[in-house]
Amino acid sequence: MNDNSLQPRLRQRGRASVDFLAHVFHGATQVRQGVQEQLNTRFGEGASLPDDLDERHEAVAGALSEEPGYRVQQAIGEWHSRQHGLIAINAFEELKPRITERLAQYDEGPSRLTAEKDFKPPDYFEGVEIHRTRGGWDGHPCMGFIHGEIVHRLIVDATYPGGIFTQRRMVAGLAPKESYGRILEMGCSTGHFTRALAETYPNAEIVGVDVSIRTLEHALRAGNSCGYSWQLYLRAAENTGFEAESFDLVTSYILLHEMPASAIRACFAEAYRVLAPGGDLLMSDVARYAHLNKIQEWQADQLARFGGEPFWRESASLDLVAALKDAGFEEAEGRALGNQGYPYPYVITARKPA
Ligand SMILES: C[S@@+](CC[C@H](N)C(=O)[O-])C[C@H]1O[C@@H](n2cnc3c(N)ncnc32)[C@H](O)[C@@H]1O
Image 1 (cartoon, rainbow, N blue to C red):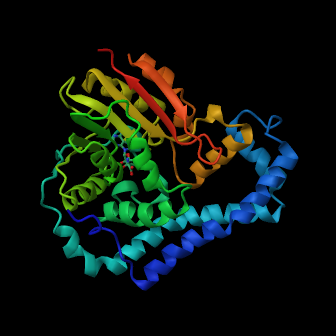
Image 2 (spheres, helix red, strand yellow; image 1 turned 120 degrees about the vertical axis):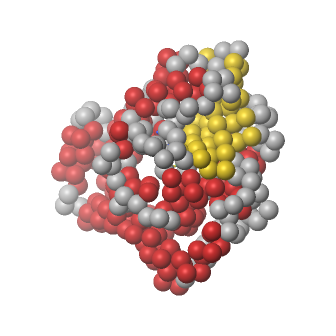
């Protein structure tokens, strides 16, 4: 089992650019605090601001547009979200001659990837360049490595309160039972949460689905590099094609904010269908807008705009617990696990009646 074999050791230019991104984020902390103070002074918790979020964006921009701190914050937010994908791709290109063989060595192993040729991604992805990255999840032949190992491991983790890998492990441990026979992970992407599941439930058979072939190719390598026997499928969460009642736990980590509300409901219905009676659901996602005051909601929505997240608002506005009950689940619960006082991550659990 080789834990670190896929972790990138960037060349100098790539490393400098990636570090620069993280430093810009941390260096702007005081700017963000300054804007926060201005917002507090002008709007308190935002009760006087419009209910409509688009109008609220306009009202805040109108009030702060002449403030240097706000302008710097906007410029950094825009620059960061436009540049991170490009910087990660360039860092990969510089590394490519040294890493291609190492990656290919993990194409074979105990994990399996099944991709039917006629697979079509859900209609709502049509024309969407998710995360403002050209071509979205599949925009580069090695987007799995770029997204999983460079963006998530070196950029997101460095700027995520508490660390995103630590959070994945924490969330994986929140399922109600101590062990599971068969686990389905929806939106498994490059396999980071899959690995947290494998470490938490070492005896479970783990199946992952995702709509992005590039990220799944990397999950395959990640599974093989650790000696795991994951079964990975290019399939949509809302239509997995698996046998009814064939899983004991259905789970996801930061999948739901990538989907419109109708797809989330379809995904819960699919989870219900494939769970055995008495089976559990555990999913973790972004803060619910209903738990935020108007200023925090504006901030979350602004991040979603910068980040090229077309369904975040719709998803964060959906009452997930009510949607789970509508799908037939019992004991449906949502918990906002505060991170530095902020109601994130939001973790839902539910059970299919026995
Ligand atoms: C933010 S990523 C996160 C994932 C991963 N669980 C992790 O911990 O890194 C979301 C993933 O969900 C996938 N996705 C989006 N919509 C999906 C759908 N309808 N069915 C399955 N996967 C989906 C995307 O392709 C992407 O790989």
